[in-house]
Image 1 (spheres, rainbow, N blue to C red):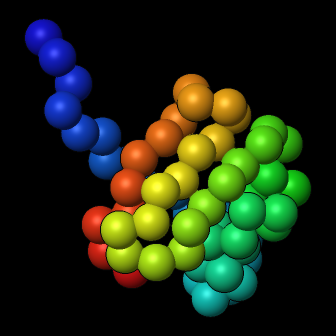
Image 2 (image 1 turned 90 degrees about the vertical axis):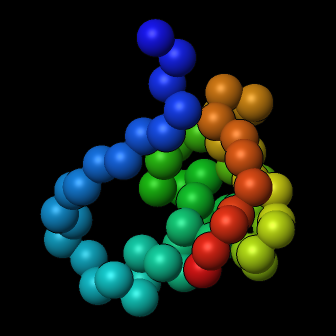
Length: 61
């Protein structure tokens, strides 16, 4: 069976706005995940993390 989507929920001890900003900033994203990240912070923007292990396009913000 092919996986077409993945959804998960987790509670983190951080303000939502702070996490949101860090998630969309390449340098900060890399700092909190420990791996390289490139993020284009806009709808339609590409993102990559851990080389090309994780990659996609931002559909909504």
